Image: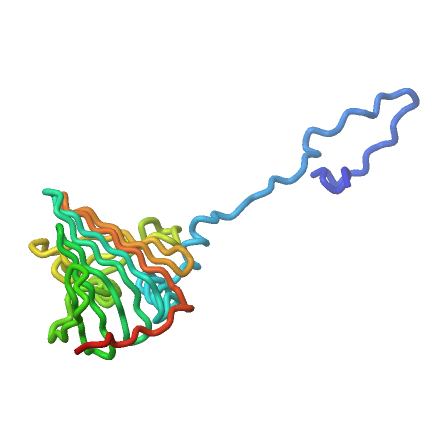
Length: 209
């Protein structure tokens, strides 16, 4: 092996009696090992950011829990917590000291306020399930070229409940079957988490009358 590594083609003469043979030729070194730039390779294998978001939403499925909080610069908050199963959903909207419960079954809506036992049919669907507007940003990129888990999406502010803000950048963290959306714009913050839960039962219409 040593002879093959040497650059000379000549066969070395045999050592004379008593000659020290421990010295190794200076050019009998191991060849240098080179490595490819893994950064470029990693970024090339990642799917486009918009496809990554679409795949994460598909992985979430149609049965999931959601929790969303918007806090203004003055400290006012609106919190929405609930579940969605297919075309049915049930959630609570809290703002200040008021709370409204909402049930949606195949686009029919019922509401009741502050723990009232009576459900009332409603022609409007209050802001609830946040998934629909969050799946359609105007643009989406990656936080870093080689980061497969963190996306940065741009939305129209009014589409995600931040009225008065033309555009909003939202960080999206993909964590298995959970999606986390966070934004901070002019002191107004938004945090939304959607978690897949395939074991949920569909929501049924409340008893009225």
